Image (cartoon, rainbow, N blue to C red; front, side, top):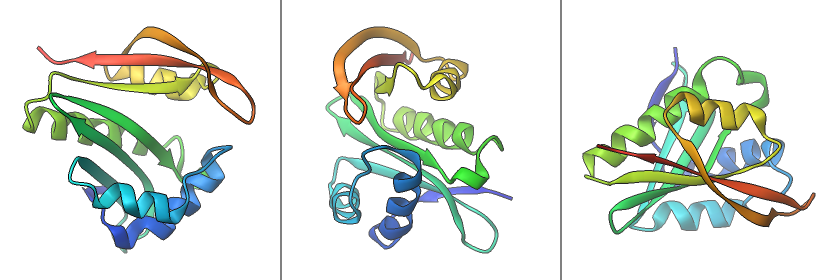
Length: 147
């Protein structure tokens, strides 16, 4: 059974490993730890009953909105609903903090991630030209507004 808990600096090494297998350009362990230590960061990890981390997500709480900066699931744990658990956790955290909505960027070619976010009420609102590198690709800006 997977549980979503608050992430901490002690999770940064495993989070970096998951990001390395998930992204062409992964955040370093130090960058992840620095992000988690910021007062505006909300970090969640998906753990099983023995404490193995299967995925993570973090967002920045900026004024009255949330910016999802990363969400990644271990390759061998994908397609098991872990991404949805993490997105729901971020939405819950955002609502608890009275945010107006959440935003993120996603690679234009990442159909799985786009579908995940759409299932949770995010909609495309714009394009960031050449936002991603390795390879260069546009990013789709997506938003979910709370009512």
